[in-house]
Image 1 (cartoon, one colour):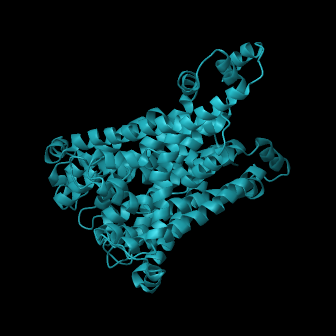
Image 2 (cartoon, chains in turn blue, brown):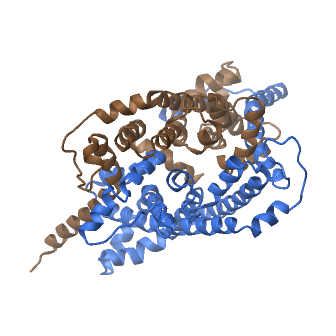
Length: 313
Length: 278
């Protein structure tokens, strides 16, 4: 930045002539030259396809067929009567709730432990952040091995305590929660970093003020200083986690394929099967539209929470 | 009597103990992956589970590379992530500069559309874009993995915010020196924008290296597969009979980003979390 400042200072000494009308039109022409390629791509690859998904959701189009007809809300009506859809929505909401509660509370706890004293901060932060960068699909295969009922280490470990493990990914009552566990494993470090940013923003003299008041325990610090000031950050982390966990797909596809018996059927997986396994494109587009509406609502809440965060800052 | 100093030490020790237990849980899959990748089959398919291999072997790595085109997956990953990133910057940089520093009619509208684009995840566009690439005959090619991501609303947004912080005087001075607008972007603005572009590079490369959904729908040929799709194709083909080579392949695939992360920690953490603040 200092380089910029220096240059600016040097150049400010040069007298600047009044900008002329022609210069302005050159500026506009250049601007159009610069924004046109990106704008075209924006419409062709992002906004256009997104809009056409919504349009497609009102048609009976199947991939491969040459014609389609507009059928109004038929896809949506079918969807709302389909048990698979409701299973999918329920599983997605369970997944999101468990992962959000787990990863936000653990993320906050770890961030506070790391921040409470200066020693080894960087080392701990690095370790906990590691899963965020790791290729999830590859790690999912590692988890498959760890959870293996015959020669996986998890059941072996539980056996030491006399607990009998199960076939975690093939058992209807454990499959979804097992995927939640993997989701939490990946998300904790991400949330921890967001909380660390929030914690370092708290002025240290506030802690001193609490100490003078005579309440020096960690719990008092948490109740009096950290929690009230971290409230907006928490709100924000919760929403980010919702948006991210709502898009669960990789672990489901690789580890359970929606099974056993639809126990891990989630929204994006249903959309993928309808769109790319059965090629019922119109119906899949309706599912996509529902997904998009969820994402838009969550993002709207996120925007509001960012505004708030700035106010409390 | 316990002195305050002792209490303090005890609390410090407790902090490390709790963090270490959590860290072990977080690191366990990595440790297990690494350990299993050096184990012979007799130590893998057994009830007697050991954390550290007894008879170390490189057999799994040799098989990982010979039973599947693992090297090709890695090369494909590099081609695709680089092909995406280079074009994202090429399109985003001038656009972001114009949005931040030039006056033109429709600027606010365009910026609003970019913000709208930020909200759309890849899943939403997959059905129409899949059809589009089917129509032009580009399914199962590198292009089908690269072109859809040439536009990055996030990249444009990020670089625009950065250009906003550059003083207008600098621009006026460059114009006074007779530099054309294109020269200003490539000779003055692009070098200044390197930190923003670097942060975006980490975001983009990590996302697309790890992305599984897009290759899954666009590609079914191992010759084009990126690492995440490749390892899943391999896993399906072997049907669980090759845990050792699978773990070796998982190590090879996750290693590049992990090494990059360990060497550029701060930039990585900033790059990956800044998307949340957009």
